[in-house]
Image (cartoon, rainbow over all chains, first blue to last red):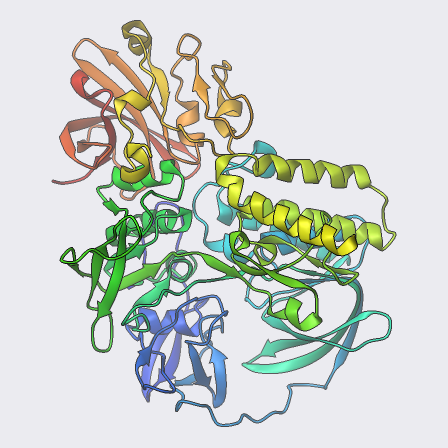
Length: 484
Length: 155
């Protein structure tokens, strides 16, 4: 199940780590998460449905859903898809609802941190926001749930589109490295504090500053911090959408991004034969990356009458003999404990299944690339105004052209402010970071802010920028109506 | 709706046709016809043959200026640029390749078209590294010059 030879990524030999699962000793590798190590050992069932007892594997692979919760060293509800594998740990399946944990925090309770800017999420938007704020003189704390910074850039092995000024032609994995270097430089200068493997759990009442609770994980236990900040930039990203059909919870059904994480970050094959659902850019790109990892892609199925992603991505797949079937959808997935195959069906012009057009496809892995939903739970808890905007992917925080929400000092950037590309997320991050620094009085550089806004408008000007353009226009109108 | 939006395959009618003389010196065929925000090919061209109106416009290659240097092939993020040179009965196609194992000069591979169909044999003439992208020149029968766009091992 391990990928050893890859055209883009150099998977080095790593130290072996032994761990215990169901009283058996398994072996993973340093750098694995618990779920990736289990997967590499052939264990795809991580939990069982509370209601139906049906087996469940992980779905999102990035700590956003609950389908990988397991008990580790006696501690329940560990998100095994992001929790690091450690030598000698004991991993168990939970008995449905976990027993109440020992609620003691690790270490001294409540350490206090005070900063100018708190950035939540260290993906492309968050990193750019943190770097921008710190460069202009603000003190910054950046918090991310993962072991490493870079967000979803760390699995993007393809070269990015966009303008040469914004790193076009550079692979996402290399952009992540470049941004991390800038971050570490500012960290060494004492301008940025970085907390990984940590979660911002909520916003709490406070008179002057914004007050947040942050837990840092340590040996699967948590240490609690109280963070006081003047401004906060929420760059929490997004979560992959699920489709409704029988069998959609079988182990072997993943979000396309989860599969991308598994193979490109941890070097583990999701399976041997994959059916990709969705021919947007995510579906097309991940299908190609599966081929690069030596995995067979049976076909790409798309419900819309046309391919949604860039033609150049579709062309790459076609010349590798991967069929793309438009006006087709998935009807059901079958298998007992894991995926054995799928039934697809042709759709008519009203997107209704056409009788007797079913086709049985033998495969062990299904990837769903059917869009993303902005992660807005923290924004909602803070109490900023949210609106449902279909073109943005769901509920998003209303924000002005400086990315400030309806609550003063609370900013948003990247996919959390509406689903788009990493290239635009980086510029939104810069805008939020700079606007926060201006609000704090650290700088007055409004010219630079205008330049960033122009770059952003430029990237959205084409036909593929239509959806985010409409989303942002709707948001601007709603904000304007409120101020009127 | 245009066919390629459904099939993912461009046909000859959607692509510009270089003249015989232009093909003899070798020119870059930019198989990028949608308006997507991207411009690295423009910057990569040493003779300023590739241009675009703005970042969202599709790139245009001036075949008279293009010297077929293949610099743009390894730069294009969409892996959508191919340099084609035709002389007598042979054609040399330079294409981007991102798979392992990397073919070696002298290997005989299968020449594959835009639909993944094998169209003949391809003799590997040159393998150059452009970052992690391999830029590979193959020799095929001249009749396949505007059709073959990939190579693969085996049947």
